[in-house]
Image (cartoon, rainbow, N blue to C red; front, side):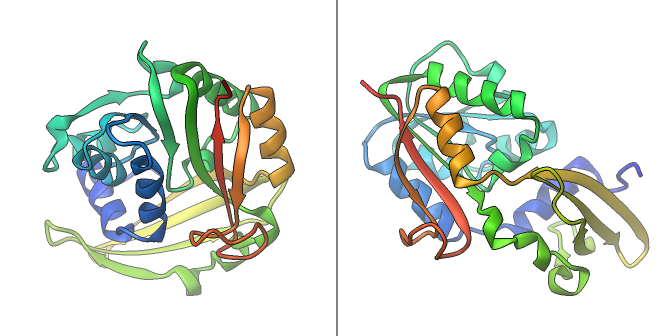
Length: 245
């Protein structure tokens, strides 16, 4: 079904549903470990983290394939301090970065194994020797998709333009490491639209192997935003890696 909401409304809905939280604190603290860094935010979306990193004094490039998200990001205060690029890792500019981040589980949206390998290779190539990478993905052993039911996920959001949007999710069981997710939206109690996508759930072992093949050394892998071990915390796989010297 073709979306009935405008691109600007979809970006506003994303922002309304995704406020600053513990994961943002974690990534910002990670970047701030090295002052005045050259930072790549891959899959930057509407720029919540990107703008915070720029405001903290770093030089930031934000890349995302969704034009509507980037348009929303460019309209926000402080956007002039960020270089925004429409694209994927293939569009990483020919410059060197100290830090690369992929936040908000964006790694799971890269479902094709070949695309994921190329993404890691592109990021590795763009990082300086000793440069650091951080990203998050959901631990498949936590089976998060089992909680993505209409009852558990139903929300009502009011957008800045006054539009009321009721949302909920449903998904199929995981097959071949992928979960098919359908997001439903009812706009102003009238138009019902649905959007189906897939998310990749990679195990800790898979991630370690893929990072090694891309040339990275894994420094840490956590299960939660307070530094919990994998298998505890919030069911996350939070990866901190680096390009070895």
